[in-house]
Every structure is written in structure tokens, then in C-alpha cells.
Length: 148
Image (cartoon, rainbow, N blue to C red):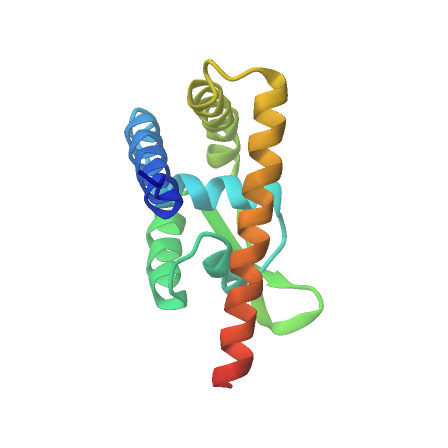
């Protein structure tokens, strides 16, 4: 019987998202809120379009999310110094306090996910997944060109 790599990748991704969601809930956050805060920490000083693409939500969805998170004091919109019309998203003091516990959750999740794998197996898995991602990115670019 042939291994269905697509199913294995999809199911692993589903389980990873489910576990992440359960763990960040302990901090009073949803998974999408946590992903936005982590993205703001890792890639500061960008506009909403950047973060919408980064966390894979529609721009209008991100706008509503940002509205709620700004109202709750998690993030703030600040003027873009290079474009008077644009606004950049920033972490607030409140959200900076929760970034480290979020990173601990992410690191723990990665450790749990790779439990039982040697360091060599982890490296090999990372290399193989990078190839899969590159293949899928190339396919998406091909379809965009073919349809555009």
C-alpha cells in the first residue's frame, strides 16, 4: 500500500493547528490572535496587508480582528512615517508581556511534535518539508501565471 503523503501532511497540519489552538486558549487568546501577535513580534512595523498574508486571512477579516485587538489593548495602529495614508501595526506593552509565554508554547509544541526523532531525523524532515513547500510554491506561481 502506497503512503498518501498529502493526507499525512494535511492531517499533521490539522493536529498541529488544533493543539496550538488548545494551548494558546490557556492565555485567553484565539489561535488567529496568537498568530498575529507572534507575527508582529517577528516582523515588526508592517501594514495590515502584510500581516493578512502572513497569517493567511482575508484583509477584511484582519481589519475586524485588528479592530477588536486594538480595542482590547493588544495592538495599536501607528502612522507610517514613509506614507501618510498608511498605518503600521505595533505591539503594545500588554501584548509584549504575553509574547514570551506564546513563544514557550510554540517551542513546546515543536518539541512535542518532534518527540522520538533524532537530531538527524529532525534535520532531514525539515529539509524534506522545505522541498515540499518549494514545490507547492512553484506550482502556485505557475498557476498564477497561467491564469493571469
